[in-house]
Structure formats: structure tokens, C-alpha cells
Length: 166
Ligand code: FE2
Ligand code: FE2
Ligand code: FE2
Image (cartoon, rainbow, N blue to C red; front, top):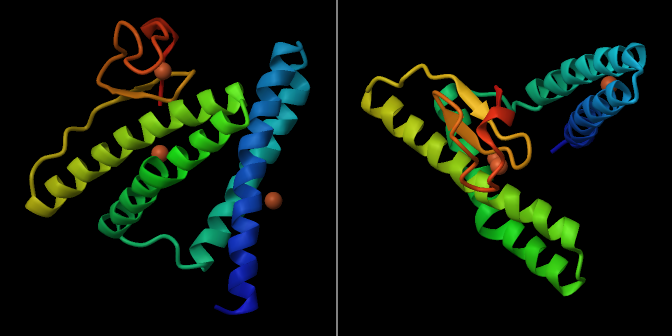
């Protein structure tokens, strides 16, 4: 890998983080009754998304949908089988409760992501119809519900009326 390619990878990570950070900051500004600052953070966040996508594309990181599904399955599998179990054990050893809960919720949802992507890839390969469904997301753990929100989140018990459409 050339130095430029290494730098694209580092810049992609940084821009992707800045995007999510600014969206969290926008939400906080709104809670503080500062909608004009929230808009500023959202505008910058959109720009960081453009930068992140440019860097990823120039890294060759966006391929065909079949390849992208394979890549997503690989990433989700690594996260729920290896990364999060290790992080959870580490958080327990250090008695970091917040970190442990954060990792636990993510681990369970990554496994669901993996299964959703696997099913989609199987159907794509078999030429079967993939239903065009809307998804509703749990605001606490990220659990995705197809077609409609459940009565409560099967992972963290958040009431369904709190879910939002993806
Ligand atoms: Fe940027
Ligand atoms: Fe995931
Ligand atoms: Fe949840």
C-alpha cells in the first residue's frame, strides 16, 4: 500500500468519526435550545460525509453490492464473534459498567446485522425476491425491526413508540 493509500484509510476513519461526533453534538445543541448551533454541526457533518465517501471510493472500498454485502458480513462477524467479546471481558475486568453495556448492546445488534446481510446475499445469489421493507431502529441499542416497530425492543426493552424510521 502506498503512503497515499495509508493516508486515505486514516483520513476516512477520521472523517467518519467527525461525522458521527458532529451529529451527537447537534443533538446536544438542540437539547440545550441552541438550534442555530445544531444546524451548523449538521452542515459540517454532511461535509465530513462527503469527504469520508471520497476517501473510501479512492481507496477502492466501494465495490459491487454483492461484494459489499460480503465485506459487511465479514466486518459484522468479526465484531460480534471476536472484537466485542474481548472488549466486554476487558470492561468487566476493569469494572467499567458503561463500557460493558455499550459493548453488550452493540455485540447483539452486530449479530443481527450479520444475519440480515447474509439472508440478503443468499437471496441475491439465488435470484429470489428481496422484500422492500422499511426499518425501525431502537434509539438505545440500534436494534433494527423490519416493517414495523415491535411492542418493545427484544434486546433492551425500550418501548416501540421510541423507535424511529431508518
Ligand atoms: Fe472533513
Ligand atoms: Fe453492525
Ligand atoms: Fe434496543
